[in-house]
Length: 433
Ligand SMILES: Cc1cc2nc3c(=O)[nH]c(=O)nc-3n(C[C@H](O)[C@H](O)[C@H](O)COP(=O)(O)OP(=O)(O)OC[C@H]3O[C@@H](n4cnc5c(N)ncnc54)[C@H](O)[C@@H]3O)c2cc1C
Image (cartoon, rainbow, N blue to C red):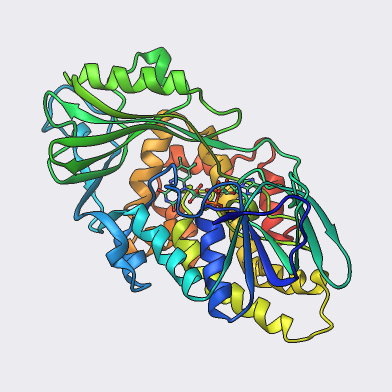
């Protein structure tokens, strides 16, 4: 991948994708399959390893015919929503069995899946920092920090959660998921061998004062060869929970269960994931994709499944609108936004954001009861909710059923409107944009 000559100007392409993460590669690959000419501009080399490892439900990837991209796959997938106590066989320690496979991507394979498609279709890679954007009726021009210029009929900003050019409607504080994770070997298995734990909300290691603080859970898995990955996670909070707090929570959890770290192979520090970013302004003359375009699932924080599912349809819509040689960057972007954020998805997004707002206010026992009820829904419903694959009608049905099966402490929490909750619910009836 070449750095671009300073002060040079490249001939206009159909599309210019900004970024070098999963979203940029996914959309660049999809656009290239539509036989459009594609340039990518990113700070990093597109083959440089990504910093994070991505998880996904096995069935979600199988449905896309891409199950071979997983590096790990677990059949024994559970969560704990009891309070926990010192008696391992007591009800308070019993897991809920999810009955669905969960996997971790082999991130190199995922990256190469998209990269190789791009290579075959002659996508052009440019290394540099996008710094300025200028748009006229014929094309958009991005100038890099060293003065080189790249032109295209459409610019797609895939530069992550703090996009370089995209504008969003920012008013509310953003709920942020924070995690502190370790990979290592322990004096005894922290989770059952061969097991994946989506959420362990047991809290018997906390004092009564600590139980009044924002709840956190353990996300954990057996990575094989005696290695385990453990991550103390805060689902989403504004302002976010600090990494120090999460680290101390994880240490307490380990101490309480008599677990000692024998070797620490990796420590994940300072991970922040914005969960409820507003849908971007859908009238702007550039497009976004991925983190920049608020595609992260507000309830789960996941996105990669959505990137794989959505990129081909979006690329097709862009290619169609480019068939009109007189189409301006603004009209092409408009078509793209209509494909990416149709009204049904904006309504669903409003419901998810409303739901997250509720969960952020829940106490420890309310959260544990909430999730017990949630995972008692028919498997198709909770899975469809978490993967964002339910239709709007089915999502509403799942939420109503959830309300019906939940105990009263959860129902009261769901009914009482506080802070911005009413406004978020209003967004469901009349989504902004
Ligand atoms: C810790 C963590 C764990 C996650 N786990 C999962 C998971 O298990 N499953 C899942 O589905 N999702 C997960 N996600 C959510 C989501 O899939 C990731 O955040 C994903 O990395 C977002 O991809 P992206 O390409 O939109 O943004 P990023 O990965 O942030 O990539 C942005 C890219 O843009 C480049 N860039 C930035 N500014 C410029 C500029 N001015 N000019 C040129 N290039 C620029 C950057 O160098 C980078 O390459 C997780 C997120 C986080 C933070």
